Image 1: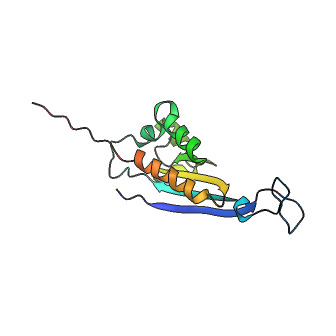
Image 2: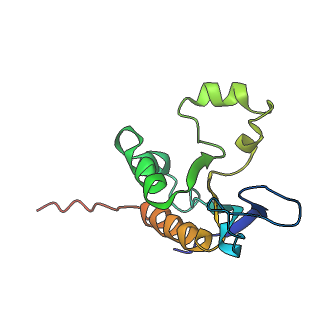
Image 3: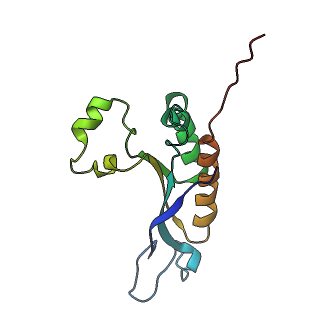
Length: 147
């Protein structure tokens, strides 16, 4: 399975502010490049067309949302399930479609992984989150053998 990955957004900013032109870290020493916070959003498409009967949202969330919470806790990234089918109740989703803040409901089902981390670790953490999410997106096919 190939996953379509897109970087949506990326920018850097100093973590702490001090004298203009000289950024200081928490100990008062000049800040290193690793102390700059970088924000990136990674988009992963969910293969709903390939596996129309598989419950991707349930698989991503896990029991009581624990799978998603575990990804967020281990990587420091935020994970959002967005797009058509991301809201459990189809009637509620239809009512929200087109409203401000729910524009994503007009797009195919996808996952956004957002990281706001120091520049020296953000790529590693995003890759970790991506690998975990991609593993969860692999459908488990159970074969029934009758004999």
